[in-house]
Amino acid sequence: MNFDDHLFFCAPSRLIIREGARHDLAPLLAKLGYRSGILVTDSYFAEQTAWVKEYVRAAQECGIATYVYSGGEPDPSTTLCDQATQHILAQLQEVTPDHVIALGGGSNMDLAKALTVTLRSKKPVAHYKDGIGNDEPLPFIAMPTTSGTASEVTPGAILIDPDNATKIALMDNRLRPFIALVDPQFTYTCPPRVTADAGIDAMIHGIESYVTMDSNGFERGNNPDPGYSGRTHLSKMFARESIRLCAQHLRQAYRNGTDTQARIGMSYASVFAGLSYGSAGLNAVHGIAYSIAGLTHETHGRTNAVILPYVLYELRETRAQELNDIAGICGIATEQPETILQLVQELQTLVGELGIPNNLKDFGISEADLPRLYSDAMSVTRLRHAFPVPDTADAYRRIIANAWDGTFSDTPALSLVQDSPLEYTSE
Image (tube, rainbow, N blue to C red; front, side, top):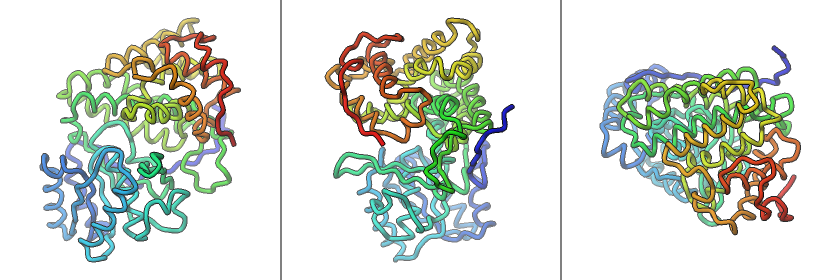
């Protein structure tokens, strides 16, 4: 073991994973001295499940007043956040709560994380597009209802700015939940498509963080409190276990949502992947997927899934040992000349089995869209710089060309991507 890690690890102060664990939250918050909270969710969980009413009643019995905001939406916008802030403060008659709880998937958790800042500061969320500065967020508690985003253990929140159709990322370790309560029972009623989208996202988080930039070469920008800081032995340990659990349980959770062991396995897989990528960071899969989402408006899990095999194929030289490790976890014979090709083909097949197109052409992207896709992907510099290859410009061209064709080639035939002098933003 080579102890050259530059390890910086930040995780929730309390991580709880257990069937029925949601019943422990109110007594725990009361023991910690909290008395006035906001529960951020959406209309489905507020109206179609008993979970919200059960929690509010239990909290009241513990002496905690809870206001429920059920206006959560998919891909929350800055407008929604600002409207929610004003609405909640008006309902509370300008009394600031002492904690914020999120119940839902990644979108509800993103909105709740943003509200932890705006409810206390009373500033528009766009004020924080370059960081939250000295404005201390309210304590945040996350209860995920899907197994995939791992927002319950990570430092970021993504909001859409409707004025220019761009994303605003709030990124700070103070936005990590201080309590992550993972009750697998929340996921038992997830429909197959949500299970697939979230589950493949969890697997990608584990894989991508396992092959990302090492911590001793990761650019932290002289930040003494970095949200992401490159892979370490600790992050790789979590990543390997996440990949193993996904390989064992993802297909079954998708095919048979009543299989509680598969659901529990995916709950653990999601958290472990979050503990890995929430420290190590990600790279080209997410970097290119953001651009795919901009063209297709498809969900996060699907846009990551379609590009995953082609990104890994590009790493066959610089991350050969790691890809052999992943192949072994997936039950593929390792250290053979064809091992890595078999791995990426197996992942390509898995994506298709989950009902997700496994190439860009079938994803609805035309050949004419590819220059924009390429330039947009290259502009996501934080993720591009973490991709461990000698030349990211050439690598991204090959990845996109292969992904559009659905093939794995050292020299893709698609000249538009391979040879065109496309421009991109660099630092």
